[in-house]
Amino acid sequence: MINIILQRKKDEILNIYEELLSAKNLKPSKNINATFSELVAIVQDTPIEHSRDILDNIEIRKIQDDLRRMSSRAESELELFWVKNVLKSQNAEKILKFFPYYSNYEKMSDLEIKSMQLCDVHKGHKALFVGSGPLPLSSIMMARKCGISIDNLDMDDESCKLSKELIKKIGLSNKIKTIKGNILDIQDLSNYQTIFIAALAGENDEEKVKIIDHIVARSKTDTHIVMRSVSGLGVLLYPEISSTHLKNIKVIRRSKSPRDIINNIIIGKIK
Image (cartoon, rainbow, N blue to C red; front, side, top):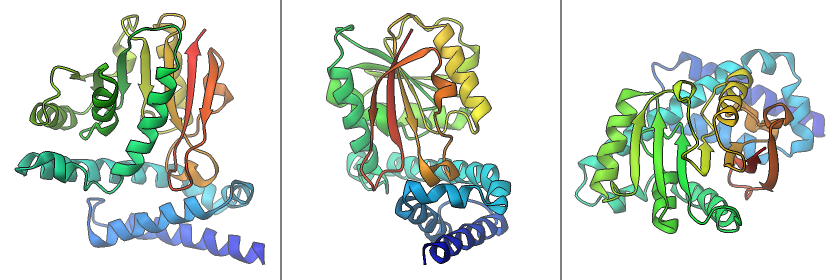
């Protein structure tokens, strides 16, 4: 019976891939939203012990990287769509909370904030968020709940422009700064006590390793590094943080997220 269920899930994933491949674009729409909701449901509902059978399938292996790239593009398009709506609205705070994954961001941020508050090394935190995107909800929540100062870093011109406008509109320009740039071009990160790496920072294992190694080499010892990873079928959506990524990091906490959240959180200190 379990083999039949797993085969059905493989077929569903392949069908989803074909639907996305044939789509004109990945901007939010009734069909695109429904297709990704279906994919997310499969990821969430498949126990980790059964995910390997699906991921080892030769057809799934062939499409995994491409499916992850499309998921990344769709997530960026969703954020762009929402931040533009927020900026046009008269009640930005209200519209912001209608973002489909707002509660997920809140739960993840709460886990990260709790871990930072337990820190016995730093009295205050100056944070860098790598890959903040056009809708930097995590930074917004942390700045408000902790009062910490955060630099958002993103490579995309439009994302930075919209992010700056949003931060100004909701009155957080004194706490959050938006920087356009590539983390790999920044040679000194010693000013930061905590560095967050977004789940979408680095589309594959090679890129993720390069980013983490660069940060480790240019940060002070005991700098906190907070990474959002995945397990099981979550690798169809985001790269997984493995032991390869953590060779120069002392892991101090792994937070298993609730079932309705795909990402889990790894918090470490740079050796």
